[in-house]
Image (tube, rainbow, N blue to C red; front, side, top):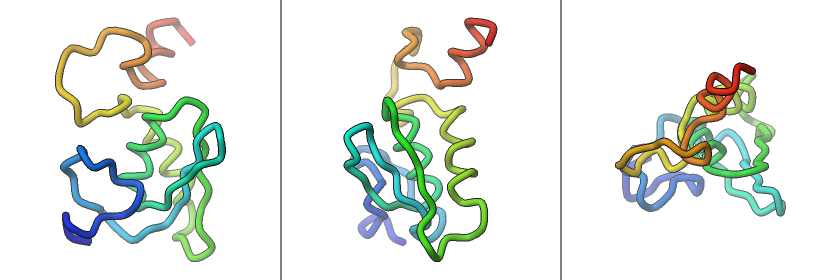
Amino acid sequence: MSMDNRCPAAHPDDPTPCTGPVAVTVLDAHNAGANGCEHHAARLLASLDGGRVYALPDAPAGAALRVFKAADGIRPFCWLDGPRTEPSQLSHAENRARHGR
């Protein structure tokens, strides 16, 4: 996909291109969702509180699990610059490490 024709999960302010086909659906806590490539789906999932990911029927094996695992280490809205010190600005993995979990 080109930068002009990115997957629906790509945030308008995220400058990165898609890295593969649309493979998963990411749902927020209210069941609103977007289909996306694994790259943008992981970035979207990392930016949601209570989000979930599901593989589309024709997705490569393990797509949803790869997105879930990748999102764990991505900071919310990772394309934004600036200091990241508050728990809500850190990845789930960083917050676990801070709290010894």
